[in-house]
Image (cartoon, rainbow, N blue to C red; front, side, top):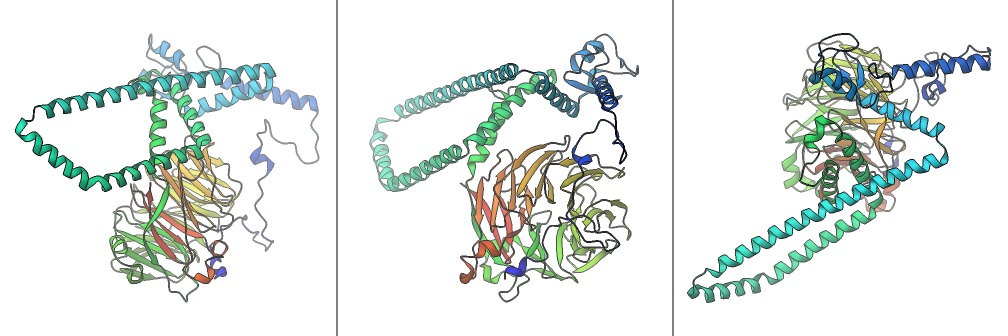
Length: 606
């Protein structure tokens, strides 16, 4: 059974030489990881030190001039972008627009409503400022900056403790006044009813004593469990609090955002955000199994479930894998019937092993698949027939995805280093993107039909605008092995998984990872990735499902699959791995499958 994992290894090499050269691990050249001021010298040439230093200084000076505000001629502070494409300090351009209604650079008509914060430039300016301080500042200055940050953080904590205490006092006062009103209302009960009322309450107390005691114990146990969870991950929660508080403080300086700066009276927006995270993070501590089924038969070794997906209404889910079959199950039936009697409502036979499935986001009866022969197929589940077959990929196709905003469009990626965009209205591909490494995953941005994220064996995520595919909008670098999955939590948040045993969360408006998650094991196989608004879940090569809150770096909950074969029960961690996971929309319920062919319905529980 240990060999059943063959065929789902994540590509980790570059495109093979067409003349038959041996395939070697993909290496990233130093030019891709190092910023160079000018073009490198030709091989064998030497560059005089003086000319090189002069060129570097000139390049630095030119770069510094590009970061100057055209109004005050100083380095831009709080950069804002105009509709005509020019950047200014926020206060500089606002002061100018109080007197005139034009752009100081080009003279085009301009008002305050045409100003937009330039997040990327602000991020770059902050990094440059940190680098300059690091280069020029003395150890004493470094210490002074650090102490100033500590003082600021201590003030945040002091303010927030006062706000929480004040809010708690108000809640206590409201509760006390409510009890007083309830007591005064009870005093108005007629005297001839008092005895009967007391007797009735006494009987109720006796009957419900054991039940209320049990309920109290359960509630107390949950509180203790939450406290233990907070203590176990106190460091991560502390970092999360400080990050939110600092971000909230910086945002409150913008006049446009002052209206929302205090969500609750006395509460800062950063504290409010952290309270929301803390509530959702401590709400769940484990994954509970509510249903289970077997995907294959006990005597068939090809049981790996490569992909598992809900339809657009979450009424049905489909599975696919190395068994060369797409199986569609009714979710409610799986929940209500024993695992031994669960049969698919539809079963589609395919010519090759399947790597990925994607339901059409508007039509329940349309589903797309990609397979090991490079064929992308669109199926009609009702008629059990293929609608379209696209055969342009030259090697195994790893991933396929339907657009959420344009139901006739889908995208696929393959080991032939090509990304192809298809339309169900025509047989040939609409767009072709040639890349330099194997494509492991593709995903449409849920809010756009022209933006696609591509995970590659070159360890990067390439984010494309399909209207101009000559180069990506941005490239996200951080993983040090192949990127096996990409998924969007929202139109701005992108999660990625890699065989470096990490998940990363990205802001599509920037290029640096927002957060890196560790706690699962993934070194060679596709283990699945699924996201919802708050949580990210993935599989592990230890045969576990791991769930992360998007604001906390370590798992919030885990569930380990056991082996149905008692002889393998002790060794299953080395034999089997989680191969596919999928959240049910807007729900704490998820599907998970492993390489043994076991599918479980899991729900987050306290």
